[in-house]
Image (spheres, helix red, strand yellow):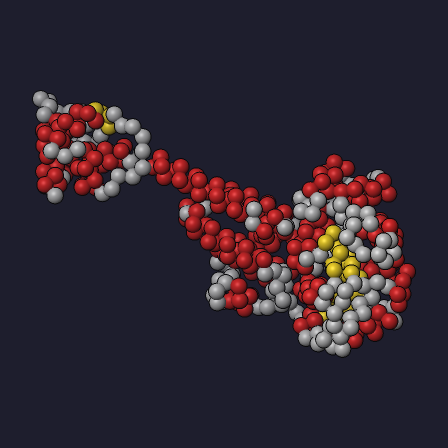
Length: 420
């Protein structure tokens, strides 16, 4: 406290602020520039340094000279004096290095998170987040917010829950965590916009529509799934409806309401194939009729009913095998279905794409491409050939697979050796 009484003078405060700032840089300091000083400050500095004339209004002082003067005045080093007067001296260089390490670790964690790696379209979301920087400049706060966003994304598509119910279920009971306008809500919506290839909504109605697309508060009757050939062994209403339709050679349209209360479904040890487009389902019914193998249609991006049915089939023991369009959107849909249901690819490898392109050498451009998690070579091949191949082009190949799905059938072996 003696040093503060001796040197904590109003006229010397500019000097101590300048010294404190330079020492806090974390770099070697030999000189300190002070000022501008008023007359009182110039006189106080001259007295401290023992000068025979007043210094300029913005003098540069050698630290060694200041150390000697302070030692004579109070017997303490300069660092102790400025610490006593202004508080602890920082090390900004070390802080910057520490922050850089924390930021790198944060983004590496995000890029490697399962939600992102299983749906690589989200790397565009990650890039946007990095460009916009940290939340309040804090890696810890940013990571906490992103962890919550990833928790929500992992729970989507929702089972038709209202948004507050979803928030309370996955975010520790906080029903307002995803309220419109919150930081977390905006983060999740931006991820969904990237995933679905749409613009970030700029109205409350648009945001509600995007949540709805992710299964939040879906209408239980309008959210439906098309299927054919489902012969489930249970005696519940869904199993009976599906069997009646399969035996009649018809497709069945199951609502989310039915799938929420399906009754007994029974066990299933066989494969269920999944197609992106209803036309493939229609062709399968036309070819196989009442003998149609189990086939489910996502009708593009799967709604809540689709995901719900596929998860129920997997829980009953069915193995799921997915095929979709070979275009940018189709790859993103496939990654989504595989990540959300545990399905495996069905004729969705790079060699399948390359063998299909000659069928439509002047086909449309595949559009925005993102990596295919199950086969990195697929996106590379599509970027090289720049030709989209929709399912209908190779429908005959897919139907031949369904016709020959018995064990050992060569029709099922291309790119899917595990397919029965």
